[in-house]
Image (cartoon, rainbow over all chains, first blue to last red; front, top):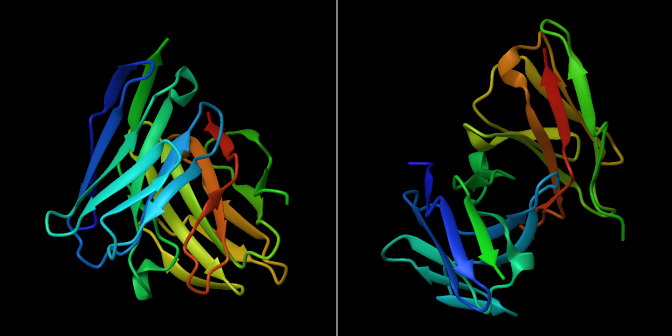
Length: 115
Length: 113
């Protein structure tokens, strides 16, 4: 029940296109959903995060869509650029108790944006 | 503001040895979490510390331990190293107190031979 399932494992997009990465979770106690971007040799960098009380959050070219009833959320990268080529991770965190500071991560999506 | 720093960045150890990794959180952040990243298992939560107390622990053997100091700096220790402990060890800090954003350091790459 702690899993977060992420798809696709890899994604190839042309420059200017839209990249879409999907995640699904099972634990209804999760109430915080961040996305991270990781470049080779670096730690994950926080991109954008959402809580279940909103269905969408946009920051620049990055948008999270959240469907609470389906227990799914997705990251949309608009106008994808070669510099966006990286591994993207979705994650989820619950509240209090055994959830303190514990992010449960998806398996990651390797995004390649061709010029 | 300086980010999360981790030392050392790279480490090579032999099976059976022990290792200590260090993490300095962002100034003002009081919570530190540790993660292990491997190609096979992905990112897995090790433990979380707040105000020098371990509040949460992941499913790792007792060989993995940690602590936090009064200045919020944290260390993790792995004893009796096994080949399978080879991984990137990441620490992340957050303000706590309802602010959930975790910011990661660059990690320590541990290779066990």
